[in-house]
Image (cartoon, rainbow, N blue to C red; front, side, top):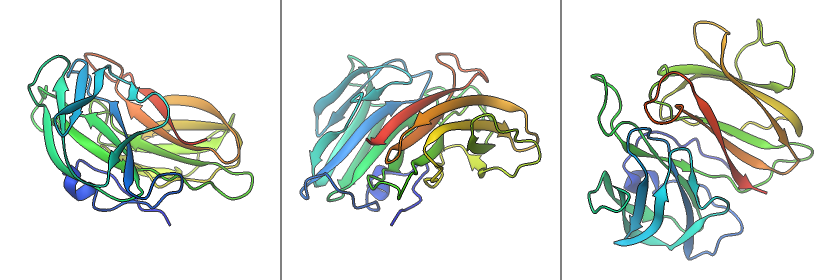
Length: 238
């Protein structure tokens, strides 16, 4: 079973739902942290006052592969500019038993325009069950606040002309992750466009093997933003 989990939620709420997964101790929760805010500078993350992530840069995940582990139960998570004790985010979390999460720090510390999203943690629940047969599991998350609020995503065999095709993921909004899709293993192209046309904003090919699960994050392009997005790919399984 999969849950569609996205949004700029309070962590306490977001962690109260999730996906049971294999490979994690029944008294522990797995998690990783990704920085997708391009005006925060590098960050540290602390759990219950103990620093667990240090000097994380834009577009990076910690750990770089795999997950960190925390005991099941209630915890306090703080996101801070590296080397400071000033909290950008401070939330109480309830870590669900046997679950895995991706915490994405996104939005603006100083929003450039009225209505732009402030910095917050977007919580995704990760799927650690493999797709059947010669397939992969692939989802896309929109965590690029400088881009349009709503985008279309096409997941197609490499070289496919998307003209006239319906998007695989229509109207993906900021702070939202799609369900996992299950394309055939091999060379897969992910194309992102505005909802008003089919002109690619970003177009990238991924070579995937059967049994792999991947989360593709759509980010702004580095410090200062601007509509030049990039993808960050996270290995959820294999």
